[in-house]
Amino acid sequence: MIIQVSAHPFGECGSKPKMILEDSSFAIKYNPFKRRLTEQDIPILCKDASGIVAGTEPYTKDVLKQCTNLKVISRVGVGYDNVDLDYCNSNNIIVTYTPDAPSPGVAELTVANILNLARSIVVANNNTKGKNWKRIIGTLLEENIIGILGVGRIGKRVIKLLQPFNPVIYACDLQPDLEFGKQYNVNWVSHEDLFESCDIISVHVPLNEMNRDLVSFDELNQMKKGSYLINTSRGPIVNEQAVLQAIQSDKLAGFAADVFTHEPYSGKLIEYPNVILTPHIGASTYKTRFLMELGAAMDCVRVLSGQSPLSPIN
Image 1 (cartoon, rainbow, N blue to C red):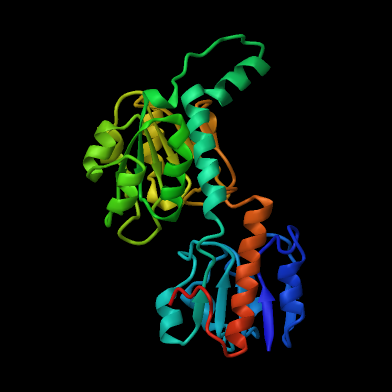
Image 2: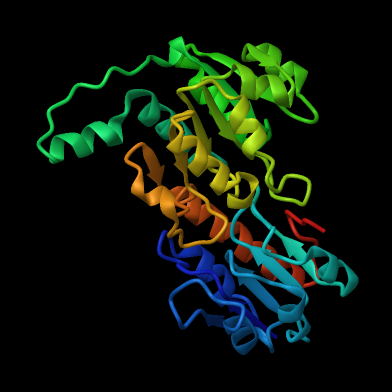
């Protein structure tokens, strides 16, 4: 049997994930293109594979139909919106992921963006480099109401990291963890109240059909003038046209995004100095990447060896 490692990069943050694969009884193939695979690339590389160690490339129904030997897709990461789970469920293809590993990296990037926006660090940096010596008045986090939309693994970690800064924290979740909220002084509010009340809102929900465009024109119109929005979850959750309109009208004083509807991003938000755009780097730390690759490699080998996966999705 063949395991195709489609994710790239792979093995650059530690050798153990490759060792686990190469010490198994399976033939191991790596991504020869050294980039994110396209929908056209995947059948060429994966048509004979029994297992795939996958990145964020699209595993659509049409793609998966061409992978006739496939038994497991093991995702390097937490998101699985790039995999057609219905097709996998119907065709006995097990899908796994690494839900815990990315949380610290994404949460820390989120807090970095909160601080960056509150103090206009990127704008001040660009002004200074442009020989425009201008001191911008920002805010302390304790002056702000910070809203967390989605309080799962990452949302909870963001709230914990914010504790020393002593902000007021509002949160919205379909199934609020009341004990966690009590421990960390979280004020549970409705979706509408979150957008009406908060100075800074950070989005941490998974992408599914219910959450597509979850933050759009109505939500941004409800926000305070001069507030900030951060998205480190998935691009289609936040409507980019609505954000662009809110930036142009000064409704939003700033926006930070690490994820986009189409990646790499090349839209008009690039033109605005108060917009921070990063190329999906939330999980791009050495430890995070190592742990994601390690978990994905282990589960791929486990499934093909007849064992139960450690972190199955379906």
